[in-house]
Length: 615
Image (tube, rainbow, N blue to C red):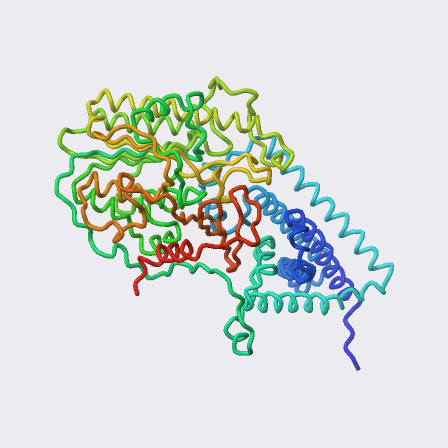
């Protein structure tokens, strides 16, 4: 005779099944808010994939989230404990999805390990401050969602008690498993075929992990469609290819002032009057791009002269840049100041790994604007007290223009109307960015005032005549400029998020404006050759170009983000995601489906990404 489970256990299992399925529907609706359905529906098989993949994906995750409650129910044999835990965990799961949806809407990447590292490592609190009002709205939303979950759970339990036929909902697991397997099969087949219509949809699904079976399917005759692919940089590092040959006893100091989120159009007399005046007597590179749309990759490219794709390899080996090695060999004094933490991202184990004992961070309990004042004051003191005859390397990282755009107490902004705080929940496609943009401009204006003080101290000290000074940004900042709901950075490779001022004052060189496309990668080979006297081929330690040499009219720029890699090739941008899907957009991020992809640009970028791998 068949063993029939007790009615209470049957009802508990059916209740948990219904809760998972109902919340999977909510999860699908949350995710669909970020999916351009018109594009997804342009090919029937991509629409079918989404129809199958979304419910299968979220039922799978919902089941994992519900597993502790199911186990508790089996152990305790009291459905109340199971129901309470299941409701709490499902509420937390939906809150996580809502947060991910907002992050993806603004920045086009999902919550990931890097974000977790920022949260638990403390860097997020240092860089992104939520107002009391915003925290109140978040708390209210969480409480409302929990209340709805409790109400729904109660009504569903009562319905199961009144209508035993609803117990058959447990059979839905067969449908759920079928959806999951079929969608995974479609992903594996599309990956083997190189089908971008399907694979590009994975970008929108949070934490998608598709099964890939290229080799197995190729053995059965499934051929990959012709596509341009950019390989990842390998773990085996051959950097530098050979030690640079440099002259002894260089006499030039080097001072780098890096401003967080400094976009290119901020360098004007109204927003940055001190830097703008300084640029009139310097080399001003007006078509300059960072190596990434995040601090991690922008600072990496600037200090290594390499694409951001080498980040993981350098971090794994804690290998610092050749430029710092050379300066240490030449007995440069090291003055390294960060308003924001230089340990998250792990610059203390990459860029400054050999001089981490020289890193000074602004007071942790102080706000960003106050920390900026602190690090500039410390750098001014170093300049005033610097001994004659010894070269120095100075690095100052100002953080005020990072969202939510920090200002000192009582700061009078020349830009109005200005937001008193930034509520990230309000940012969206129809939101007027003027108040937030004016607050950002005010933060840049404050940073420029500090830069002006630092430059005056350098001039008064007498060191300016033999000090190379660079003023630039780690990346840009966007305020829905393209009307595509991009905000901040980390979201795309447009001019607004990549292009940044690059003002280079070099003793003995005439002032001038340069219109050729330049990159953060170009700083290292320029300093190595013209400040440190290194005459050997810069291709042995960098992929950048000499800014004082002959710059090409057109060059591919390899750029990096948390979730994508890109090649900027003239008017086109080639995008490569983590799933191997490649798309082409123009500078306004409109898709160019029939674009003529430059094989030379892809080949040159591939060479840059693999140049320092050991063969």
